[in-house]
Image (tube, rainbow, N blue to C red; front, side, top):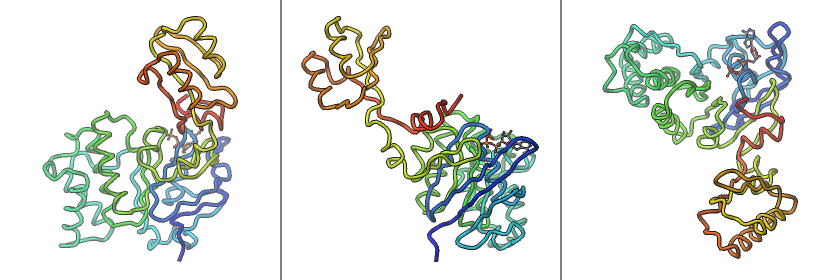
Length: 309
Ligand SMILES: Nc1ncnc2c1ncn2[C@@H]1O[C@H](COP(=O)(O)OP(=O)(O)OP(=O)(O)O)[C@@H](O)[C@H]1O
């Protein structure tokens, strides 16, 4: 028995001169909601297309639940579900007809198929729109259906490629509900995104990918542990006098904007000491905003670039 759902070792893939995957190593534990976090062009979709056998790797190897993954092995393929970045649905057909079609492609029929279609409609929260053509759906509804269609054959591992790109915040929340439902069922999910807030909200573990390599991997708290405990402090109000600003500077680099003083903590910064100082200055707790480091800061530290550049 292995505790690893999917492992990749030394994966390589190039398109002409473009190196999409550059010796990528990754291990995804069973039952993890695993975030693959990286900017556009980092290699996330290429990675998924190799796992699902849509493209062949130039080098390297995968194992799926402890067995070497052979793209031609149908039995192994059935253990994987894939919700691609680009919606793969028939827009002229209804939600229900789409699901039935995908179910038949997976060899389902009769009562078994009907039950899976019902379950998928429920998961996607589209019971009341089941008979409507997909072309009348919002982007978020299509995304949910796209995910549900990938689950009809009850795979053990779901790959979900950037499901929230181009959807409004409300639809995004509805997609999260579907994903959180899968998480609560203990399904192994590999979720690619370039939104660090999504990774922080959904994922137990995260791998940071850039230029086709994994730069860091672990649970989010562990990954952030290496960063300073406080990323920045904002003092609202902008009412500090010159002496107070000079005193603030003992804690690090200070810059001033119209409404606030921003402090980037220096070496040996202690938040407790800072709070004592702030209280002495008569600052209200609500005027002091402490920014904790995020995965965005980690990415910046690792690459010298913003995640969304
Ligand atoms: N079929 C292809 N032909 C040529 N280049 C490709 C192809 N597929 C991917 N690439 C290139 O490989 C690199 C990795 O692309 P990939 O789509 O895997 O990144 P990504 O992290 O999924 O980003 P995005 O969110 O933009 O899809 C990019 O430089 C991309 O332009």
